[in-house]
Length: 254
Ligand code: IPE
Image (tube, rainbow, N blue to C red; front, side, top):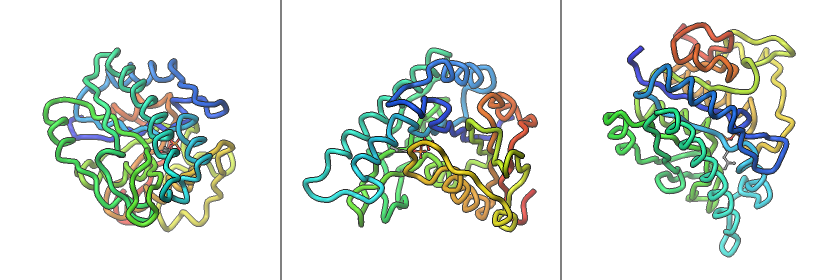
């Protein structure tokens, strides 16, 4: 498979969401090995924050913005999620992948919680050189709110479009989108209202599974489908095999 792809690692698969910032190094090593053995270039890795960012964002109310003199949370949250990014990059590099961390705080601008710009010419250059950019959900300065939290899922949507990446996979701690206990094999905007989606038990300032699906349906509207699967099936996704998860598609594309 030569086309470029985005792999998003949910915060719940790389951290222990039930504790304060705790990196799941075992899971990271397993994911890094799967990537190293499947493809080491043409891939952008985007990860969430899990317990290394959501609790801080909540504590400092960054989901509501930031005002003059109330900016400590921006630094605290960015620092903790950047620390997680360092660990993801380290795990990939230890497995032999030419990974490098890229921080949205430095390169993106949002307005009312939505990304309005993200410099991506440097990402194109990294991909051309065989590097693997590793980007993460982050605090971003916001033209209206002062600051906001941009989820990894919002970055997936923005960067898949900006970089024209047609293949998008999201590794999560569930086997796909669940309707009750059953995996929904395919979701389109038309079938979405029929599905009862559960919510995360843990602190999540970016909307959990329904926030994720909103981003992915916007991407599908623009002609780019995406797949949600259990992290243990990452290798299957990377190799283009069945992963037993959910396919999010536009009304027209299969
Ligand atoms: C959140 O990113 C970023 C911060 C809270 C700083 P995500 O919303 O993508 O994280 P997960 O995947 O839900 O943990």
